[in-house]
Image 1 (tube, rainbow, N blue to C red):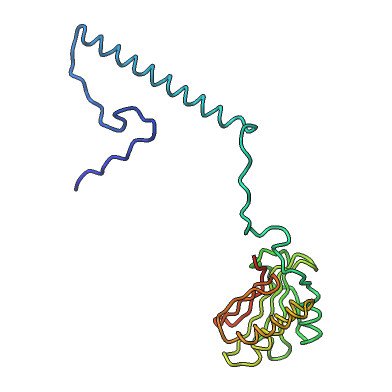
Image 2: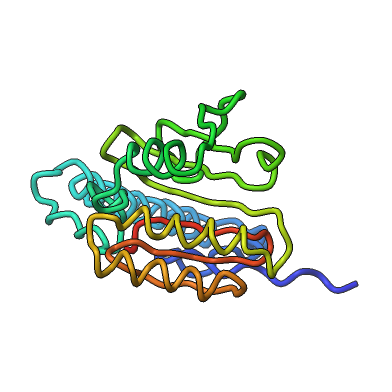
Length: 221
């Protein structure tokens, strides 16, 4: 087994860094005195260099007023209102679409869990009767007018009209204040309910998946 190769020396290292030290032959007389003097001078020079480098480093890191401006935040970083579905209210999704139009039962989760969007609140809505485990909708939000994420899940196999209806009416509800975009969103979700597809309409990103069968709405960044 060969010996491992030595690591490269760090920047600024003196010549011979990392190499095995050379053991001088024993000597006496003037030669020995010169050798001692050479070592002392060498150590003194290293101390000066090291001290100078430390002074420069300290000067650079202890004067924050000399620092330039911080780099700008990436334009795509989700901040402020860009974290929310534009124009969507909790009442629109829960009260109007879920409860009044479809008789769903909505309540906070039995066991608090971390939300996907890191919202402070979450509601789970289930279809009435025997369909409560087959058709569900999750809404994540910070307050009444700041909705971050909506997801509808359908446990039926592809070809079910129940899934197509759920996905299309959800897209419709989220854009109810814009008649043109509302129709566009409904038709897109209806057409793509049996696909893996994604689009952005009115500042909302819709993603339909076949496995698991779902449609997700989140801000289009």
